[in-house]
Length: 391
Ligand SMILES: Cc1cc2nc3c(=O)[nH]c(=O)nc-3n(C[C@H](O)[C@H](O)[C@H](O)COP(=O)(O)OP(=O)(O)OC[C@H]3O[C@@H](n4cnc5c(N)ncnc54)[C@H](O)[C@@H]3O)c2cc1C
Image 1 (cartoon, protein in one colour):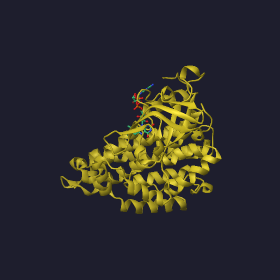
Image 2 (tube, helix red, strand yellow):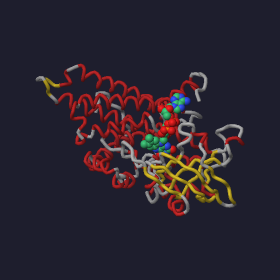
Image 3 (cartoon, rainbow, N blue to C red):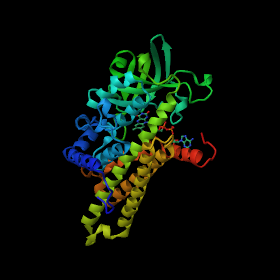
Image 4 (cartoon, protein in one colour):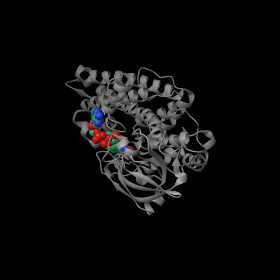
């Protein structure tokens, strides 16, 4: 789509071809209808699962393709670049990483092959709470050991896809905050069987939002989770969640990069086709330059994203800085591209049929979630630049 041609490996070229074809089947009309009715895109998610795309990062020994995070990024990027929306299913790519990296062999054997085959979905990631917000270590949902089980009590908010998932990755406090040395201690991660939990104390309430995101709040009233569903060691969960969040940020940066490409491509085409005052609107620098600037921003952001992938794949102890920078830059580039596209299309940008107003709403999310721009800047200020911690 651009004058700069990226060199794609054969695997990635094939993935992109497959996804382009898929997105032709699930075109704008499909997404518009889902958006209008706030429906989960079950058919698309099933198709993506059947193509094995959501299992790309699961090692071959557990039934996946064993590809790298670069491939994961390219899959999500392509879905967004060709007009789809991976938000309905992207979580599985990074939540399964927590099980893979920190789960025991029995848990990996029990869950990963079934996730890879599509038999079960691990789409729900329950971290955020209404009282704690970005301050994750202040969560108050508790998991109290009671013989062979933990009893979960509390509330999560913004738990997306909870109604469409068989499993939930849950962060809860196992030791009170005032009883631990570091506030990040005493948090633990659990795999919750959603069906069983719904039958014994878990309630899910959908939240209607400006985008079609199937997000919810979840209430836990003495929900029983077997001890064997604890991931890794009790009390070390925050570390596990953080390592998964780096993957999440990199993968979601892929979606933002794809959105930027989609907006730029749409805006460029329309700027060339639409004639007003007897000439293409793209001949006016007021239209041309914002599109060109968004393109520059998007290319630079993708370069940082590539670097984040390389650092992640090298297994370096911390890829936090690059994961965060990639998320910040790609989300800002896609937002700049979204704004340029809106302006280029004039009044038609507001018409549902052009998909721009929908994509515009969807692209805005990434400046706020899964981590807001301010919190990324705080991370860079503190960890990279050695300035005082702001929270
Ligand atoms: C559609 C949607 C889907 C989501 N899906 C999930 C999900 O599946 N699972 C999940 O766990 N969470 C999910 N989230 C939650 C998301 O990660 C949070 O909304 C996000 O992290 C911000 O938290 P908050 O909304 O509580 O904002 P707050 O923490 O209340 O922050 C509000 C504003 O204040 C700023 N702020 C706060 N503290 C500071 C500071 N120290 N310095 C500077 N600025 C600060 C923030 O940057 C933000 O702009 C989702 C959110 C949305 C909207």
